[in-house]
Structures are given as structure tokens and as C-alpha cells.
Picture 1 (cartoon, rainbow, N blue to C red):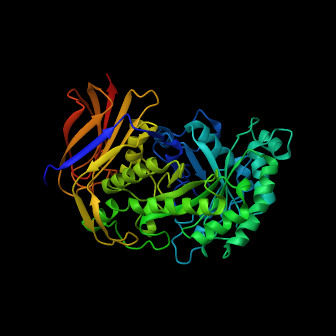
Picture 2: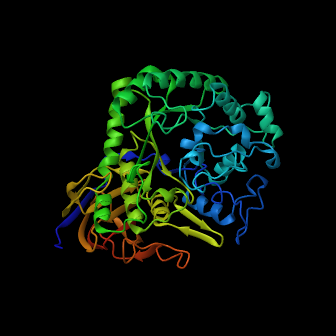
Picture 3: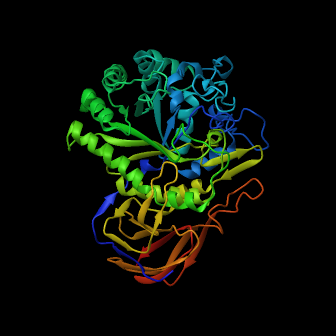
Length: 516
């Protein structure tokens, strides 16, 4: 490779605030996400939580790993399962809760039972909301539109947010929680445009009409809640839904995307560790950008350019194999891709202030569990890079000149031309004295040298490098070697406003600088 790669950053240029809700996640009664993921049903060889009676079924190692992820929002209990979930089955004393069949995931013809396990409902509303408080995340609850009623949804709002003088606030207090949980984000339906969804609505007008019944009943219980309508990669659906709902009754419209496959089209028997898939993923961020821009245009067309409505990208992630929805593992390639997409969300959080990786544990999850410990996947490590080592203001005047590559079509990702090998975001704190520069080298085999020029910021000579990398993009953390891939930290003492850096192949590198 030649040395023609240059990045220039004008720190004095305009800044764009980054909404921290882009660092969010999602849980559902699917595979081992909750059953033997968040909640230990079978015996394990690690300690369970003992100091919080509401969370005594959680493993301490899972709770600690989730805390360290610093999630800003956690969505539950689906997903597709939300439209068969009856919240009253999972409150009160645990020995009296309703045991139910998994009426969505357990009903898929020919699917193995571990995909839709029977649900003992030990992890319900109080456990979920207590977990959110424990980890410092805002809760986001999806109500049952598909098989539930507006009254059931409104009762749930009252149970979570009502005073003890209300019927369901009193029930909450009886179950051990006097103070309201104050849940502010509520979704009404999930992917309800799809034939696979209980309560499937073919016509957007019908969804909007029924949505309003839910929204009005729910806001009667708490007028301050924020409501998420179900969007789709279809402008007619989005615009019709938003026009028929009206500005007053919606705060977000949701969209979903999994790559390189689409949900429901997940095939194959092994993780596709090959160069064609690798480069397709490295070139795929425009798909996410287009989803956001198209949905943004739908909001403007339906509600006007001054609308307060924003986008909730409340399911996104890497999905390869059907059985990944039980328990999967992610390699370095997937971690690098996650970083690329998180950089995209940083750039677009004015339009899309919330994004929820799907999912948290085991099921297409950032964290994998086994009876003896955890695997913190490179996807988890990519999130850690962002929440620990970037700041909340994006520097807009940043130019990358570098070599490019072309890719072939791979599954849901179309072919692409002239894709830059290098991605870069620069972020700065509110005080303007701490700068973080994130650099990604997408090259499959070659390190790249870059010239980095920083204007408007005189850095101290001492700085910190944090790197996510390994020998191959197809390496994993495993039970045999849990820390094969980890974030490497290194102090540097030769920082200059103009400097040359080497970026290893298939790597993510963060440079953290302090102002003189």
C-alpha cells in the first residue's frame, strides 16, 4: 500500500451534540437472552446476585458486564414477543407467576424448542425495571398491540408510573415498590406491518387508527410518556401512519435492520468467515445512513420540517445463522463493523437519537454466557470503546483522503465502489480540552500509514491509544481463551498536531488527547 492517506481535523469548526441514547440495547424472550442469559434458571458455577432481593436470579458476572457497558436505554420484552406478552403474568411473588408457552418464537413450525423456550416469567416488570436502575439505563417498554388491549397497556403504564393512590400503583406497592419507576419510553407494536407478527396490520391506516386508541388510553395514565410508533422501510407505510396519528401522539418512529442477512432469511450452517463477507460488511454503513435519511424524509413529508418526531433505530445488529437466536459468538470482523455503524449513529444522532443493538445476552448478543463464565465478544468491546473513550460532541469539519476498494454483493448488502479504507470520527468534551479521534482501517490484510493533521487544538505530548485488533478478523474469544481479543491500552509521549500513524489491518484505534 502507498502512503497517501491523510486526515485533517479542524477542532475549531462547528460541533454536533451526540445523543448518548445511541448506545442502547434490547432484550426479549428469545433463545437464551433472558432464560439462562439475564436470568439463571439452570445451575451455574458462578455467584448469583445476593444483595438485591429483586435480582437474586441474576449472575453477578452478567450484571457487572452489563453495568460496564454503560447502556443508556434498554428495551423489553420484544421485539416480536411483545405482541404476545401479557405483563400481568410476570408480577407478584415468583412462585405464583403464570407459566406460559412462547406463543411467538415457540410457534415457528420446525424450529427447535430452544428458540422459543417456555417462559416461567421469573424476570418480569419489576425485575427488568430494577435492572435498569441498577445499570443506569432508561427503560423502554413495548406494549402488547397484537394480542392485547389499550386498557392492558394503560394498566401497565399505571403500574410503572402511577402513584400508590391508583389501582395499579397500589398493586406495585403491594409487590414491594412504593415509588413509581417513571418509565418514559413506550412502544406501541413491533413490526406490525409483517405477516409474521401477531396482530399483523396490512394497511397503515388501520395501524394508525388502533395505535391512537392505545396512545390515548396510555397518556390518560401519564401525559408525560414518549410514544414510539412502528415504522418500516416503506415510505407509504411511514407517511400514512404519521399523518393519521398526528404530531401530538407520537415522539419516535422505529426502524430495524440486520446485516448481512435479513431477519427471517437467515440461513447457512456456519459463520461466513471469508473475505467477500468481510469487505461487504466494511462497505455497508450507507445502508444504515439511507434507512435514517429515508425515514427522516418521511417524517418531514408527513409532519413538516419542524416536527419534534425522531427516529428510534431500536433493533440493529449482525445476524448470520438461524440458530444465532439461541446463542452465538461474534468475531473481530463483527466488532469492527459495529464500530463503523456506531460512528454512523454518532454522525446522525440529530435525526436518530436512539439505537438499540439486538440483543444483550446470548441471542445475537454482545455477551455470551456459559456455566463457568462469560465471553465478552468483540461487539461488546466495540461498544466499550465508544462509551469509555469518546466524547459527546462530534467535530464536523473532518476530511479523510485515502485509498478505496470495491466490493461484491453479499446477501442483503449490494456491491459498492470506491469505499474508503479508513473511517474517522473526532469527538470532544463540552469544555473543549479533551479530544478523542477514532480511526478504523478496513483493509483485510495491510496496515495503512496515515498523516494526521489537527487544527485548532494544541495537544499535550502525552496521550493514550486504545486499540481493538487481533491477528485475523475471523478470531473469536472462546471458553478456552476468553481474552484472546481485548482492548489494548498504551500511553504515548510523542503527540504533535501533525503526526504519522500506522493503523493495523482490520483494526479500530482511538487516540485520546488533552489540550496544553
